[in-house]
Length: 400
Ligand SMILES: [Cu+2]
Image (cartoon, rainbow, N blue to C red; front, side):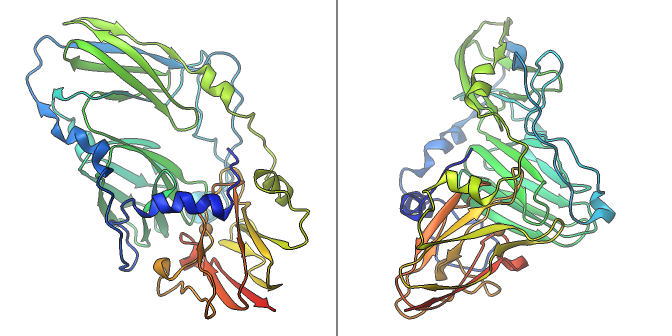
C-alpha cells in the first residue's frame, strides 16, 4: 500500500499522466495535451455488436476468500454530523461472509464482441451521495455512456474520479438534489472519492460488453446468454486486485466458475489499525536523517476540519528538500502538492519567484510521500489540486 515516490520517480509518472485525457475536467480551462495515438487500446470494445443469442450458455459461481480474513478498520465519521451522523462505519473495501463469500467483486468476460444488449442499468448508471455514503459502493457502467452523480444530501459533496493516478474530474455539488453527468470513454476501473468527507470512497467499473456481474453479499454471481466459446474472465476487486480465469462456455450449458482469491489476500500486507505517523510515512520513502529535509504533512488538523498542509508556512534555506507526506489516515483521501501554473485555478494560484522551479506531485495515497528540492530563493505558494479550493494551500519562503 505504501509507495514512496520521489518527485524524480513522479516525473516519469507525470509525463505519462500528462498525456492522458483531462478533457472532462471541471476546472477552469487549461491547455490539455492531445492524447497519444496509442490511447484507444481500451476502447476497442466500441465495436460491440448486438445480436440474437439463441443457444447461449451461462456462467455461475462464487468468488471467495478462504481462511481467516481480518476486518479492515472501521471508518470514522468526522464531519457534518447533522447529515452524516457520528457513528463509525464498517469499511466497505473487503466484505466477506462467514463462508468466505466475497461481496462486490466484479466478474467481467473479456473481449466479447457480439451478443446480448447492454443492460439499461449500465447505460444510465448513477452514484447517489446519500447520508455521506456512495450508493452503490461499486457501480458498473457501459463504455461511452454518461454516469449521473447525484447529491441527495443538504450539504456540500465534492466527487472526484481517478483513473489510476490520474484525476479525471472533480465536481463540487453544494445543492441538495444536484445532478451532474459525466461521459466515460475508457474501459477499466475508476476510484471515487469525496474531497470533503474522506471516508466516502467508491468504485466505478466501465465495461465494453454486457457480460459482467457484481457479486452479492454471499459472493455469488451469474452471467447469462453468452455465445458458446472459450473466454478469459477477469475478476476484479477494489482491495484484493484482479485475477483471470479461463473458461469454456457450451451451448445452453451452465459453466461453474468458483474462484478463491486467498493468494491475492496473502499478497496484501496485514492491515494496521494504527494511524500513520510521520515516522511511518518516512518508511515509504527515503530515510530522513537528512538535516536538509523538512517534512510537511497532509492531514486534518483536528477531526472534522478540512485538510491542510502542516505546517502551511515554512521558511527554509536554499538547497532544502521538502517532503510531503499524506498522513490523512488509512481511509484518508489522496492529496497533491502542486506549484505549477498549468494546474492553478483562480482560487489556487501557483506562485513562484522568478526562475523558481515548478513542481507537481502525483495524487499521493495515504502513507505515500514525495519531495521537492528548492534551489531558487523567493516566495512560493502551492496547493492541493483536490482540497486547495477548501483552503489546502501552503507557503514556502526560501532564503539564501
Ligand atoms: Cu488534498
